[in-house]
Length: 115
Length: 111
Image (cartoon, rainbow over all chains, first blue to last red):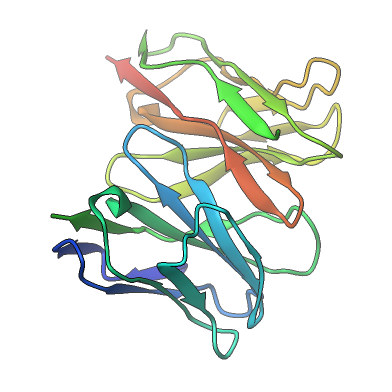
């Protein structure tokens, strides 16, 4: 069990550019979550998948954000036309997905800075 | 709406002091309650959890009891160590299992 991994760990981009982040969950975990954490705040839910199906999206997830989990394994989060307000830590978590309210295991995060 | 409120930090303590970090929640239905910890330079780790009223979660000397009547899940430890210095997040699950987090409480323990 290698834990949840995220790539890249850090990303600096210019406003208006597109960025894509990857998350590899713990193997055999069916649920995958994305959260965003800004400085001094707790993580905020963005979206989650059960296998390849995206089951819920937060209103925080504007049209510029899109997430996929094509084969029910890894997931990508893309931000188009980045804005300075997108600067944050993007966290991925996974859980077994066999019951409600299971423990979610978090990755180290991708820190995004939009200049 | 669903939310979590936890005490402002930083909390500054001497080694071996008693720790309490208050957490209250607002939730519909029957949430599970969690404490996550974030050590410097590391990701979020589950510290403990409780899934129903009156359950006590415990780990590494930390404890928290699910109090439905007061909608609280306060974190306690009898004797903190320097290595406990971290940011602690209270959270609960709602709906499709998304976590609602508090803003976090930074704990600083000095020798």
